[in-house]
Image (tube, rainbow, N blue to C red; front, side, top):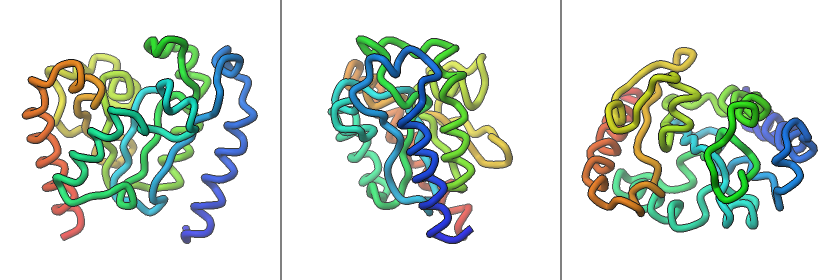
Length: 191
């Protein structure tokens, strides 16, 4: 698949997503928050759902959690141009509550389409919600963060959601270790 066709596929998915009425979140959203980044990225980050700032801007990870994520990316020598970022849900749940299973079910096809189009070498879930959806329902972030699993032949891991680190800064050192492991995994896959 060449760059043009990846862009076309993602553009088509985004257009279809913008018309989605599969769950009640379409009634309260300001913008669909589809994804952003490099469609040829070796690593794809998957969060859970847009927050208020993301809903207003139409882009994932633009608030305080996004700024913190940028710092961790910079720490391992990556920038936003080196990654692709998406969420399980494309619309904001009211009051930033956890996504409901039926909302995830309605939206998961868009995320799977993004993964198929980008074809990342590595997927990193940001937080427990995306990890439970992509890695397994018994995933526990405090127990399993930084461990490697497989998703349709692609190495997948999960780290704490940056918003969780803003609430509990004691976990920041664990995040550094997880990002160092990500850096090593990417190096091993490209060597």
